[in-house]
Image 1: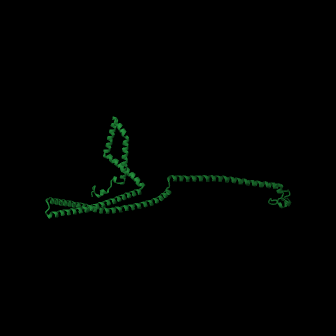
Image 2: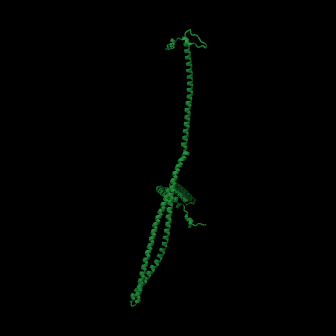
Image 3: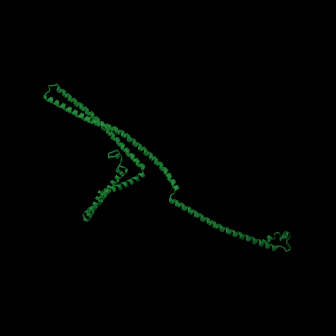
Length: 343
């Protein structure tokens, strides 16, 4: 099916300037125009000075020709338009990403403003219909009054016996009132036709207004739903982000964490190694000390035995086994001789 510019399919499509980015583009163009005008005012003295110099004038003319070529070339204009639209779409996308719910609420606000304008225009249209009705009724009354005057003039002329001048005046009044009544009747027909059309249009607009209000309410409910959904999802996503940071972790933090664990492992190994080395050295020292203590004890026992042998009397006889009988050799009264010797 072919689509023409006036078909509903083509009317439903919006060009770049009718979309949200088109509004932002218009603002950028206005600001750009202001900047160009300000720059032109700033360089105007230079242009005047350049115009006085032939070389500068030639360069200026060349620049103007190049500028005109760029402006008039369709390919350059198309490229510039595409670049401009791409930049505006990018900026609009950034804004939409920053505050999508705010954009939707602004859109709902604009729809409500248009709905209020529609209500105002419907009131004005109803007032116009009422004005037409009043004018039709007034014209109808005036037409009836004019017809009554014409009939009265006709009755006066029908009685007869009137002077020719009065007869002529009554005739003129009759014709004038008839023409006036006919004019008012024609006007009433036109106004009545217009009133009927406006009533049909008013009734249609009232139905449209109800549909528009339903759409505004539906979109507002949708925006409220999306707002609650976004708030809930943002809370859930914040928890998800926290969990993701826990599981994945920050690369820098993970590196610091690994380095800290390596440092703790190295430090623990260093301390354990030092303690083991000290334990080996302490064991060696303790062993040597035990050996030396044992040797000293043996030497002391040996010396004590030798000293004891020297102190024993000569009459002590040896018993089998080499152990002297100290009970018979040592008198009871000599038990504390060793203690006295040690003292």
